[in-house]
Image 1: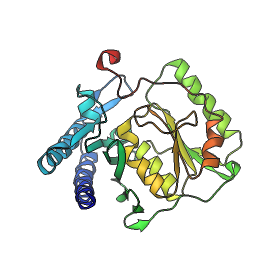
Image 2: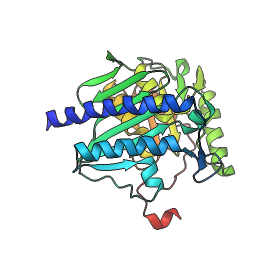
Image 3: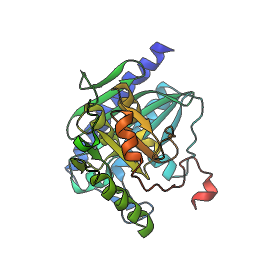
Image 4: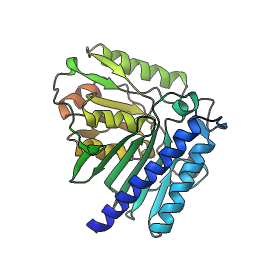
Length: 282
């Protein structure tokens, strides 16, 4: 199957480039914005158009493959990861950035077989940076090999995170409590570009030592996850256990020492899983 998965990865890169071109064009035009679950959970016609482009192309070239996409799930499609080859796609990661013209927007395409990630493609459209990784083959940005930072001192680290779209007071309090405790370890600083996929690629690039977030989705992190590990990094849950793609919780770090230092300071909470039964999502 090795050649087949390489063929799929090559197709994913070509799709990401095409999707990125559509995103860049749309940035120059007025965008129709619709709300999802709240006034800060946004979707645009570009999200929907890009996802449909990817779905149609994948179904034509790989008709037996499965698909998990942000907009498809929002429209009621199931979010279930099976053993079947599965494309896990966020067509516009950083929709709020996109709407405001903030220059960090990514197309994220992860690919899993037997529930294990085989490759990931993240295209940072405005920057024109193509991040890629395939299991056992390393991680790259525009063809250049990526390596995580070799920093082992949390006090010498930059940590990335995001605020998410949940504005419930209890959740916001936990987010700020975690940030305060991590900042006061102390660390050099906290950063975030507004897209989970790009934050994970920054870990893989060695620009930041770690990224953590609660409330993201499997399509936000699937591609970035394998890019991090192929660059030499580690992944775990915010409680220190193994990463579960459907749990909506992630810590991605350059090494276990930094990851565990962060885990100790996080005020964890448990969002509704991506693969929760539809009736629990009403």
